[in-house]
Image 1 (cartoon, rainbow, N blue to C red):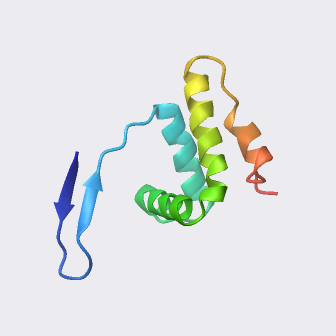
Image 2: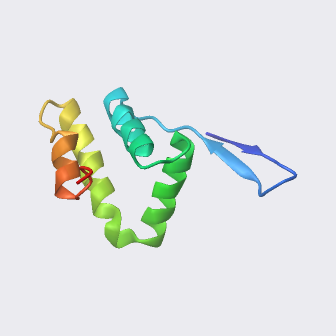
Image 3: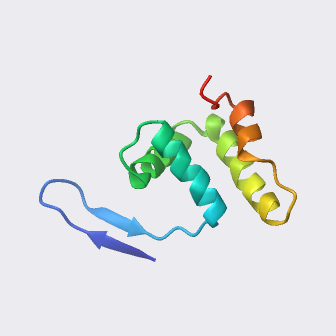
Length: 91
């Protein structure tokens, strides 16, 4: 479900609800802080724009989503392995 908000200073904004596991949210929160974003929302908007504008790079997000499901089933790949695979480990 979404809610539309209007603002005299900018475009109409829709608010959406996103359901993700707490463990995945912790990974997302760590990512936006490490990368210097001001908020979780700013990071998610950036990630969505990037996925839309560069679908060839979406494999990272797909791997992360698949890993999240597998992790919930006790079979997942730790986020550290995904970060290493995509060179996101800060090195």
